[in-house]
Structure formats: structure tokens, C-alpha cells
Image (cartoon, rainbow, N blue to C red; front, side, top):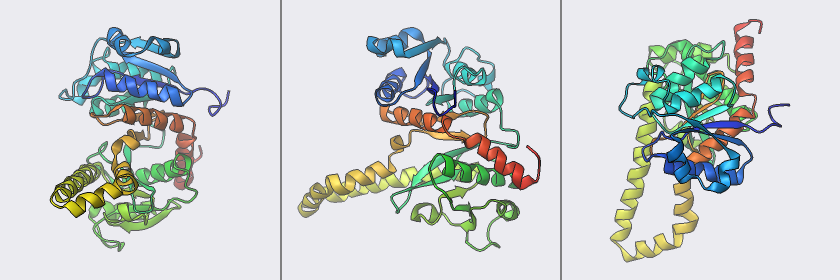
Length: 339
């Protein structure tokens, strides 16, 4: 049966996350109510059953695990803890029993296990964590890497660009995505040694437009922004902090003035609600780990039910797409190799 026609099988790490299994299972329930897919919950059976209504038992497979990798544990220890919920969830994808894995648990452990147990695509040297950021065009900008590869080489950035372009085409539905390389200026001469070395490699990618600056992520001038995992992670955390700070300062100023309170009340639904939705990570659910031979969605540790639901939707959309095959085709074509 073609991939697009059969039900996608999603393995969810039910024990990962800051708040235990309750919001994760609630998100799974919401997803089941809205989409058709096969759900596999991995974790402590008793804990799962305590939050899973009996009505859903026939639609859910439970895989028992007795260990949970804590946020403070070393990511490298994940390979030895084979009874952990994230290890078993990843293993389901490796063994072909699931199409995708979703976890709000230890992100380092999830990325390590997905990379080493599921494996990389043949022409990818290192995977990249991709995230969506809002822009002023009421659309999204895909940024990668945001934390998987801290120390990058030029080849990694080139591969990130190829993966980003294909993901934007196949999952985001952009026919001709515009790809930019994050630097400290738009001129080709700007940047550090890494970006200068990566620039000519990225020119092989059809949608590459050259260097972009941080502001271009949010002004909608490009659809995909490529950077190393160190810079990307700082960018992501800074953006989240700025958004939170702006909303806090707005609330503080509104409280000081009666006219401001009235104006805020009038704008609450049409302006503030839409703006909050634009910057809310729960709207995106999680970050796909691009470059592995499967699908892994890494969700925020503090994910609520809505975030888990949307992470599952990401996994379904990814699994029904041709992302991985198209990434390989692009890299093989650019490298002048035979597939």
C-alpha cells in the first residue's frame, strides 16, 4: 500500500516531558479525535492507563518500559538504557514497527538515539534540528540547525540547506523556497570562516539567495535560514525570551492606563490573540530532526497537550511526504553521483 494511503504509525514517548504523562496523553487523545493514525504509547503501563480513557484503549497500543531518562542525565547514557521509554520508542522506528517517534523528553537523548539507532540518510553527515519561526507575512520561516550540531563544518551547512529546501517544498508546500545563510551581513564577503567556506557550496542549491541577517528570519524575505547549531540554539532561545518579554511589558503598560486597558480589551481577540498564536511554540508542536532515515519530532520539555497534538500532526505530515527520498535525490544530483 502506498505510504500516503495507509495509516501512519506514531510512537510517542509517554514519560518524557517536564509534567509527566498527563499532558502527553491528553495531546494524544486530542490528536486521535482529529486525525486518523495508529498510536503507540511507550512507558509505564499503569501510569498510561491512569490517564487514558477506556474508550481509546482499542485505538492505542502500549509498549511497556520501566525507565525514564531525566533531563539532567547525560545524553550519551541513553544508548545503554535500553529499557527507557525514549529508547524503546526510537527502536520501534528502527525496527519498522512505527513510522515516526515523538518525544518531549530529554532532547539530547532523543537526537542521539534517533541518529545512532535509526541512522542517517546515506548522503547526510550530520542531522539538523529544524524549527519554524513566525514572520510578518503571516507565514513561517524554517531555521536549521537549532541545536543538533554545535560545531559545524561547511559541508554540514550545505546539507542543512538542501534538507531545508526539500522540507519547505514537501511539507510546507512551497514550490520555490528561498534559502539564506545566516551571517553578519548580506554581502558574500561577510561572515566568519565557516559561512565563507559554506557559501559556494550552498550555491548548488536551487533556492539559495545568499547571506541573510537575523532580521530576515522575521521579515519574510526568505523561507529557510541555515546556520550552525550553536548560533541557531542561541537564536531560538533569544527569540522565545524576546517574545515573552514583549508580552510582559505590554501587560505592565496596559495596567498603568485606563485608556490602554480599554484599547487592549478591544484588541484582545483580533490582535493580541492572533499575535500570541503566531509566537506560541505549541502551534508548531516540535522540531523535526532532519537527515535521519525516518522521522523524529523533538518537542519542548514543557509541552502542553496542544503542543503534543501538533507534534503528532507534524510526524504524520512528514511520514506521508517524500522528504527523505527527495533530500537524497538533491544531494546525489548536486554531487554528480549515481543513486
